Length: 573
Ligand SMILES: [Zn+2]
Image (cartoon, rainbow, N blue to C red; front, side, top):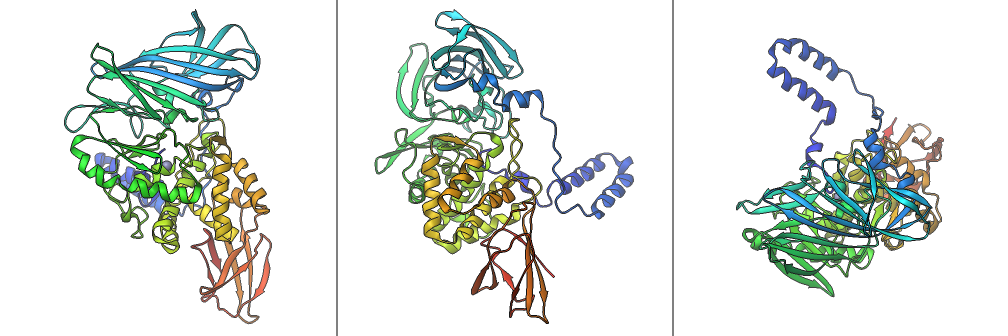
């Protein structure tokens, strides 16, 4: 998911939604009205448990084929793709080949690639030799006549064709029309998987080192893809071939086509080329709105260092869906207005000052594209961090107080129903809490580090250390622990691996002038310092899950907890 789905955030959440569904369906089926309304009222009267356990659904064979890093994926390391594809808007078909270069890590005779079952495998060649293959759902197991040797590099050409699926929140592969009726064809397939439209090793752990992308389209249309534009050549058959080269590792789902009647304008930030693409009718609006890209890049460079894909440049491309972080070709569909689809996104008056999609999707160039999770289970590394980057952008532009106000605006969107990190190896996308709770967790961690200079150095170094790598949460935690000399593991685990927020329990004894305090948390070793007491004169206490007692001159009502600096619940008795 590129940006949080605002439609999943209606007040009341799934329980209310279920009730609404009951009401809606009862309106259509009057006979059952009384009975169902009675049942609904009964459900509503029952208080749901504070944190109902998640309802795990068993992974399907397709989930395992997509999500597991099994033998036939782990036995090789991707080096290079050359995807060469022809797009026919009339027939709504694509055809082409992906040249895949990989190094074997184990001796073996088979590798796993992926291509959606509705697309045809035309042939798979190693040199001139056709290879056998076996398809199972979205997987394509390629068999070699002789053992491939560990340490050696091999290249195969995977030819395919068909009509890719139009599906999912952003369309997967869309053969569309722009408002003036001209072809508008684009891809957005993060959740569904890039093998929806091209053959690749469709998982998150392994990326090519670089990639060539050749896109053949009817002459007169423009293709904007990832990487650096190389050339375009008229093939003389009504089609033109556009060449792009991606100089850096790239996630499969970031590989994208955006084909339309685009107009182009350009700018520069130092040496970094900035290229902008919009429909002719939207050009004036785009010139005005896309000017925010420069300040955004400056803000993120301030915190994290140089833009990570300088050789490929930065592009912003108009599309009809909300937006997606396609590497160096960020797509944009936020209606050229500030906020998120016209809304004050965190509801505290700050979101209308900037364009949410430009700031959020481009933030993924740092977290998501340069630093990548190795399994979708740990996708908070993309979304929690990038949501936190929005807050840093606000802080850079308008100061710390506004940054704090902005991030805490996200509190109302957090559900705490499921852990942010999901089960590995089954392509299980985390809940939306990965965005909002993820950002609030990082804001909490900043308060735990309790030294802004050190915090900013730390997050800068985290980015620099992990850029162009595919990592798991443990890698990040180990780095934080090493750099801070603190044991932050229980804090990371409490926020990311459990559903509930930690609760600071306070018991006041007015006669003795004391307060007992402890954390109610799921991690037995959870020990997090927190600011409490008087708002203008916080004191930092070090609660653990065992009760401690301190003197306080403050009454139960006066005794405050800095819940804007630490995302926690507080229970006073
Ligand atoms: Zn995002």
